Length: 136
Image (tube, rainbow, N blue to C red; front, side, top):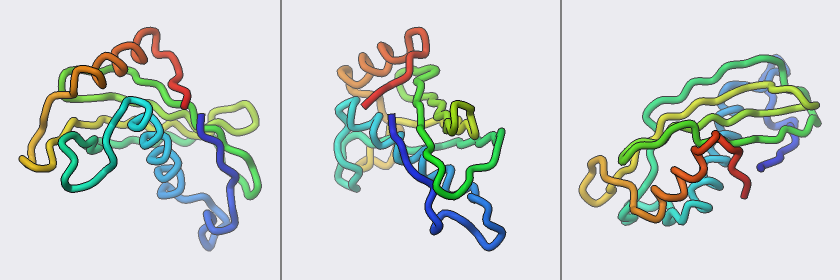
């Protein structure tokens, strides 16, 4: 689980935490999941990469300055090329935001969709059983 504290640099001119900050937290949680699945570093030369093709955020409450936000990640579904994730941003015991992501396995060298390597696919399938939260 990823935990972050809302900093002053997260706030816009209306003292509101923007969509981009919510997405940055989800991005960091996705990177943790990727590393835990054995994914290579994100570079143009990587044989396997994860690219987001759809992102949806749903807000339930505001995030406030100095609040601690925990990001819980669930693999909700997986197939041979796609991965569905839900990141729940939880603050003070309540979900503040959910960020749903549809990601695609991508071969950067060929510039096209690819199949998940077998070891990664096994981890994704294991994590998706019962939609258990993926912890680092």
